[in-house]
Picture 1: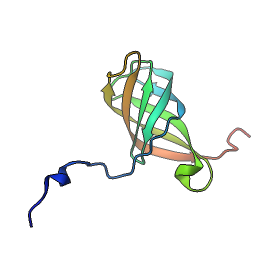
Picture 2: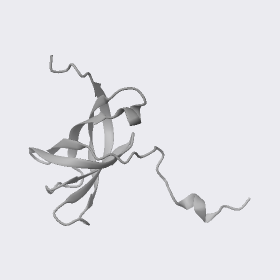
Picture 3: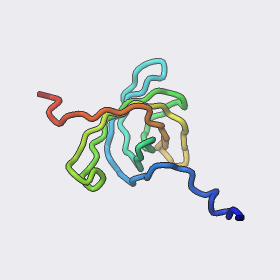
Picture 4: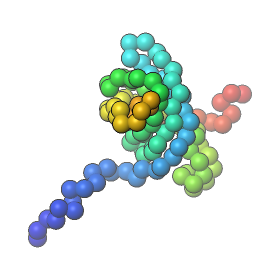
Length: 114
C-alpha cells in the first residue's frame, strides 16, 4: 500500500471555526498586560487572534470567549481560557497575529456577576 502526498497536508487534530470575536487578552510577560484583540479562528486546542499590541512568544495568556449557538449547537457558552503564545505573525500592517495554544479552559456561568 503506497502512501500518497495528500497525507502530509493538514496536521491539526481538531476542527477550527472561523470566528471574529472581540476578546481582551491578559498576558503575563514579566508583568500583567491587558490588550484588546479579535479572534480569527478558534479550535478546542488553540486560538489565533489579531491585536495592535506587541506580545512575546512563550508568554502566558488568559482570555474569555463567548461561543455562539452556531458552534455549541445549544446556547451561547462563555469559556475562560489559559494558554501560551506559540507563534507571532507580523504579516498585517498595524496588527500582530498571535497563535496561542489553549492549555486549560473553564466554562463560566452567565450569572458569574451575581
